[in-house]
Image (cartoon, rainbow, N blue to C red; front, side):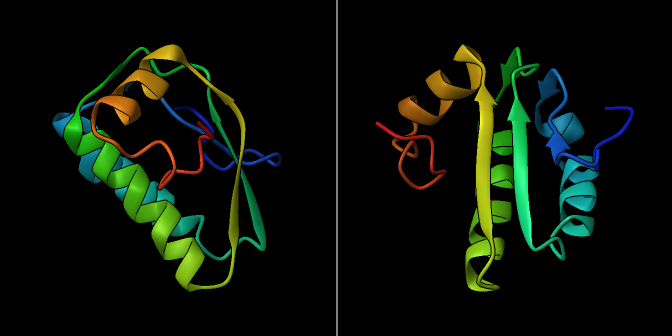
Length: 95
């Protein structure tokens, strides 16, 4: 994730596992102040429960702050992981 705060939003890395969770959380916390945030999940090829939890916390933090998250794209790996955990709606990924 060379530029996690690209002008057009946050670009998620290809691997989001427990090993990368703390680093991603720090990067997403820095993006909380943006008025609206586009998230690009197309590069995600591997994600575990810890990774989903970090993304869910980010979505919830933004909602509590009255800010939105707009998914510009989502990989099958991210969508499948969210569905397996029953978090598709909570993450705002649609049905």
